[in-house]
Image (tube, rainbow, N blue to C red; front, side, top):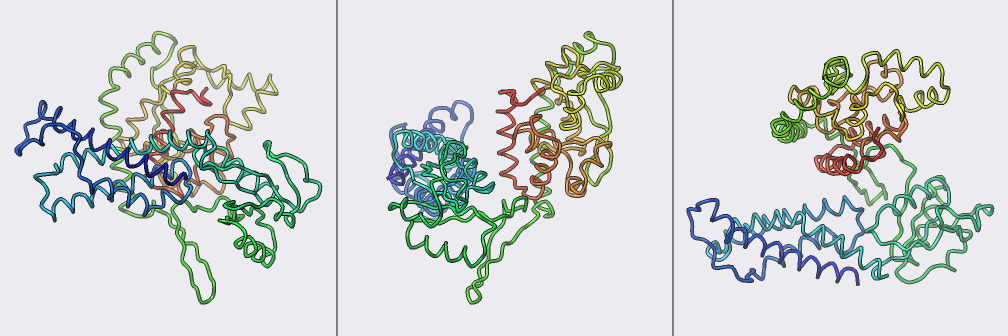
Length: 467
């Protein structure tokens, strides 16, 4: 049922994208740009019949009607499918000599429109359907340990996947009847027949189970349910952009893991991404930088900018720019507070930050809360010392605390924002931040940078974990 709903939604979205593109080309662009070729026909509800079908085909090809993707992965797949569909549309127009009927400008605008119209309508449609109880899939989680709980928390955060969680099954009799995030442990694994129904899915989250028993369990479940998933105990290994090879004769599965930032073309792509974003941003924010600098100088003694050394790419130190948010004698104030307040000392030792930091000026607290103090780092990006997205720019004294992750983290330039900033920001411990930075580098993709950038805007405007 949900597949049919999504097909209808995508059909409406693609037609709407084309109509909006047609309106912009015929009604708006001619007032701005003089085109060397004839304008499209007067605006009416026209749409080449084949074009929406091309888009729907590639959405189907990317399994957008048969597979449950997490939120950001679904957006990535829909954008990828829209791009391929648009290229196919160009090919059809060129080969079929249909340029007099279908404007290439309209095709480009249609593609750009599908990048936002299709995901928004899909999300709204799925959210509405699931709220009405339509299209939800029942799922049982085998394993009520840490792995099972992590899987539960992951799918609970994904509001557009649409799972109805029946409960846990676990052979630990002590767990029977207990609850994990309001989901009940129903009984033992051997009792699964009592809870199965047509169309149900099962996820096996007991990575410590003996291989023979695991194979037997999966083979048994495949005959009973629509889909069986398995969560391996491989946390921390960079799988984001990995793929698999199968050697059928020996029933062998091989996971291929790449370090994308070792690829020269990806390094160039990331650099282009940085310059494209930072250069226009600097031109826009120059007046803001001047105003903030004046306010800082008037509000407290000291320079407007705070310049310090941070650990950069390959472990080299670089001059790091921020607006000054602290009093000039900040180090003295910090030492006094840590010596006198045990709770503050414990907080500092855990996070390397203080929520109620006495070193901050009144205006500095405002700048920190709204992340405005980081605007001067645009200069670091243009100098090549930093990137828009990357690991945290660590202090030299934090090298020892980073430990074995230091070599991984210093493979790339640090970022103005990064994965840890959009995953709780200052609520994360220092160890958790280091782990996230390492994961980001090992799993880098341009799409991951785009997602982090979008989530950064949400975190900044929502002031999530900022202080």
